[in-house]
Length: 185
Image 1 (cartoon, rainbow, N blue to C red):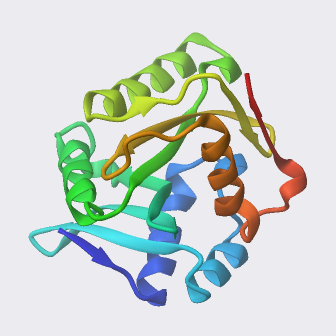
Image 2 (image 1 turned 90 degrees about the horizontal axis):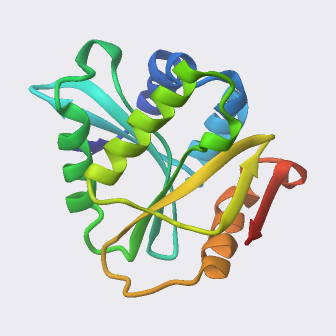
Image 3 (image 1 turned 90 degrees about the vertical axis):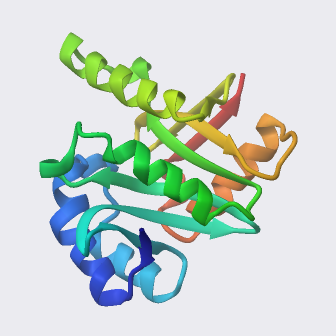
């Protein structure tokens, strides 16, 4: 079950989840995160099973579009199918929106074989769960190369330039836009 978190719950998600699950160059600074949650620019959701926090999602929701900033299953529950359950609940929870978009590490930025395996496993997980890669977009934030994935709910088509406009809106209030670079190939 997905449950919207209040400020205290959102802080907990940052401290027990985001801080450990994402590298520092992919984490929003805690003060900016807390401010974004307070101002309703970001929303945190806990993924609960039997009253236990199994995972979390942090979103930006603008104009009937959901951008997943962070999504993770807690370490002790990983590799047991809970990620797929979380995505299924996510799609149901946001079923009245146009689409869900998320970013995953690009293969372009890999440094070694082990990192490439992790990126491939993550990408395959989302693809297996119905997300589609958005082709022909160059996209990076703070120098980290990403691929964009989309899951269409109530949207028939959208152009790459429209997607980039949406991504700029998602990041506008959260980060220093000097470090946000996009390009349609």
